[in-house]
Length: 329
Image (tube, rainbow, N blue to C red; front, side):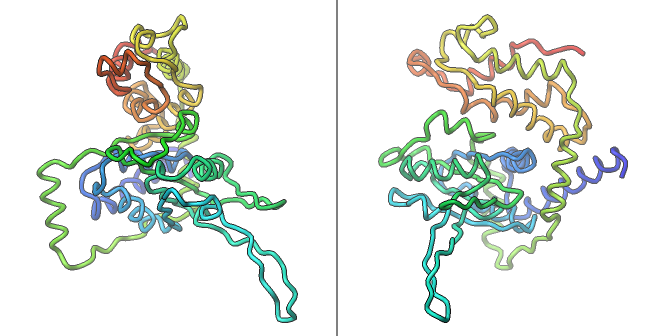
């Protein structure tokens, strides 16, 4: 298949996936696109929003449209690492001989929902994040590979902080994107209520499977990245690092630690998928700017002055993105 034909086929498939998801999920297009970007870029996504905004429904709907294995892990303070990755079990055969067998946990799925991840203890959080990073689970002397594609969508509730264990900044950096889920508009809320009144379950078509998703990833790797656009992504990340010659004045004033090199990698990888969603065979500076907040908001740490002056990661990043010089080819 020619590169142009592969690109057009990929765009058509992704449009159909978004149309099917919109049968269940009203609005939230940025959240849907962010989830698809993370899936095709091979990363994981962190969603933050109040309860009842459809975060759980979104991943379950995506699993139906893509015909992928789905599992949900409800994080609680008493959740143990073995409840996530699995454990060794003793089993006996017909002769009474006993042996150990590994019983896989819910992490062995294509799409894993880690609901309210900040309610679990750091030990349990680290077990999940290790599987996310390595794509493997080790039990004893045996290493088990996780299925591909593999995506973890973790959720956080921003309104309840008592009895929670916030993710350390170094572990937040392992998420490709952090997306804020906003309240629906009045028109969207009206459509949500109308769908609630309907008694018939909305049927969903299966658009793709595992093989097609891996093919889409290969197409994303063919998206061209010009040197000046790569330099723009690097300039954005360097602008968030205080104390350097490339630091933005706001970074020197309000940011304690800037983005790591993973931020530059994520800008390019997510930008390529975003360009594919927009039917373009090359990455542009506009693509980088469009995804910069979702990619960088959890990779910078603010200082005390920022909190005292009412600054947020989003308010600082918006100013930095607007003032960093847009490259010219």
